[in-house]
Image (cartoon, rainbow, N blue to C red; front, side, top):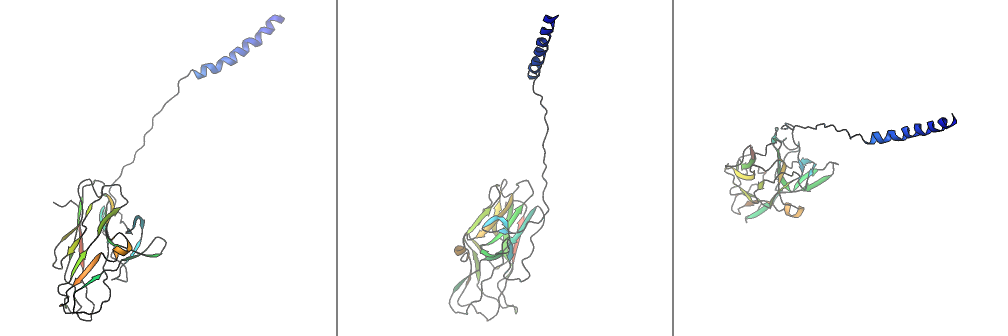
Amino acid sequence: MKKMNLLLPTVFLVGILGAPLNVRALEDSEYTTNGMITFEPSEEETKPVDPTDPTKPITPIDPTNPNGPEEGTAGPLSLDYASSLDFGKQKITSSKQVYYAKAQSYLDGNGQSKTGPNYVQVTDNRGIEAGWHLQVKQNSQFKTANNEELTGAQITFKNGTTISASESAKPTGEATIIVKPTNEWTDVMMATEGQGAGTHLLTWGNDQEIAEKSIELSVPGMTTKYAKKYETTFTWVLADTPKN
């Protein structure tokens, strides 16, 4: 009887030690789940961004309108902003002169006043990379409130550079644009198929010094100049297809 009692604990221990061996022999269990996201064209308005850092939103200051600039267009393909031009106060002279538009003033996200290049901004949130085409025209010659023209005056946009925070291929921006005061359309920026998704800017001048010399108004010396304010307007049109 004593010998049998000694053997029983030994059998019991083998059984306990053997159990983990059976657990390790089991195969790992696997189960598959899915992830999904679907995008659709955005109808939300895109605010103007910093012409020196397009990742940051800003509040542009319109030198011609104390109430602020006109709001951008709505829809998935939008013309968000275009700078108004201020050529300042100038002395009357009988010689040919070239005057330069002041740089774009704006408030950054912290409300700090800054300046940068004048620019135009387009956003394509259609989600198809089908391309687009931006043009501009000067609707009339510079005129006074009494309809007196600044005869022969001509505006030239220079040092055009496209910038963007988007990984989509950049559109083509015209380096130099001569705008005629004859209601004629002039190409500004074009995106072909596979280009231009996201927000893209065409800036005139890529630093402060160049920006202040990038949009010029040429006025002949022979032109009669009255001691008055002269004004004009521009129309910018964004087409939803590339230029033919």
